[in-house]
Image (cartoon, rainbow, N blue to C red):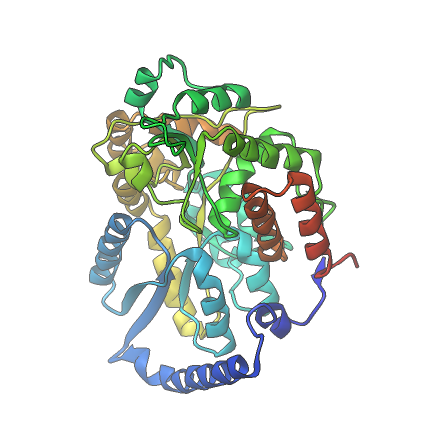
Length: 438
């Protein structure tokens, strides 16, 4: 599979629409090149290698946990100093990352979701890691089923930073008030529960409480939250390495989301903000699709979690984050690998998981007393641990960002009223324009 234009156009076509934008881009790239010429003097000071790490960790309390762990690394590695930089939401970072690479000023380490691996590889932006990882004793401690999201074209391009999967958080007190005594296990049960949980107290046809929050937007969070429903309906969006969006399972999954809206029992999030928990915490929605990393885990509200209800089969989707070593210089790449080794350690993974709610990627961390105690304090995590056996990954392919964009547009259009089948047909036509079957 190849995209139908060169590497430069593959990135810039969606973003360049006028001459003034081209001029601005040229200025920006000039600045990037100027910064690049200064890197050799700023990256090393008295034998100390200074590395930059870009991440999009949310919520902010989780960034604080990560910063403390970075500080520990810096204290124990005086010759390598890592600066962790919050570069914005992951959906917003990709143009920035690719522009930095084109301008020859990439970060040294990048934390990102693995579905963009193909795009990074096509651009030659990331370092293959299999030779380094093969010699690393800690490799045997990495949970084995996470390796599928690291590989592309016979190489390993990243290592797992964290993992988790999606479930449905709910407010038990609101369920009790609605007379719901069992959590939904099927789509139809979820739909009926959402209806019972939707309350219009003043009769103005605008409920003060909705059954469920659905994410609105074209971005990856929306697509991510929809994938469990696709898989549960037996759907696929890639067949023989080709997009196949007009799939009966995809239509069924989109139709189900639209049905919740037609029932009046689902509230749409603000555009591209479907991960925010305010409506759930304030009781404006009774259920929300998210994972163990959510701020809800640290809130004072009553909450619990149940698995994504099933249509044809039980399904969820992994919510992983990986770390990449960007191609820079051999010296900086070696220093970056030192940090990755530290990040994979049981010590790091235990503290990170206990502090954030993500599931550890290190077996020893998962079996540690500290994590076991944390699970006992947060028993909802058992739902996510149990779901890992049937959790699936989004496709790791070179054109994933284009596929996701087309899916995101279809999901958004359907949530705004277009038929699911029509929206997916348009998405298929759009993605066909940039996909080559050769």
